[in-house]
Image (cartoon, rainbow, N blue to C red):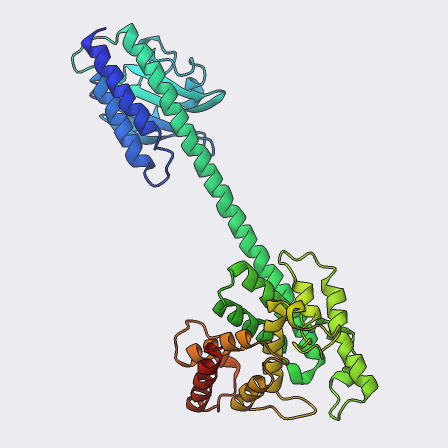
Length: 396
């Protein structure tokens, strides 16, 4: 075996190693440049170029070149190259295509029936002709380059499709949440005293779940459940919802039907999140089993239910209602604390207090609870109360 051929085979080995890596989008052009230098160095060519076929424009794009001008390369037509033998080096004097100044070898690059691009090389700096062995080696190299370029093309196509799918998914989520907000607005519109209640419960619930370390996926699920927890009120008489005097036992029974009505509505929706209908159905249950509609207790109540129960109760207490005035934040927190273990979960209460404390201290970039509280609230008093509750619950 000649020294020249041994050198060529050695460089081919280096080329194969590079070929393993050039599907990486971040290093693609750098790796192709390295591949190109291996090729021109192997064959002692003072000019060369690798052109990539862009299917969208039906044109050849220059990936890397040396010695050839842009005008020279613009003369290379994909239509002419597609009639040449796949990956076989063709001396320009034997190619039925318009000549390219300075080019001596032209290699159309193919992967199966897919045209990928073209490799061009000038004559050798030694002025010696290309030997049959070197042309065979170029054929092997052309296959390697074609596969690498094709892999990169497939990778780029996949990346574009993923980006498009991500964009469509984001748009669908916006539409989905817009629909939820429309539902919530319809619910709140029926009761003039609960304007934006569903939105606040959704935000409070998501903030608590985030503090508990839930995944983004599960946080979105409890957020959606918070938005829809009162959707059954759409089927309750407006006059009853806005009644200013205490409810009769019969009226209270009618009002309490909204939980089951909410479940019946949401159960017909195929949510991507688990237990949305369960959280909606049981948000008026209590740990001691004295809630409704099913009088569930303790372990029968999921964390999602416990979160929405507390978020809903806190917002109800700090909002004006036709049958009572709203509580200040300190009184509402004291009421939640008084009802721990009977109505509210201590772990959920601790997370809620920690979130509110962080918001007051400015430690969270997007506050979800504080912006909805009474602007006249004394934050120093609230902070002191929160500090005591957190210290007490943290030791349990």
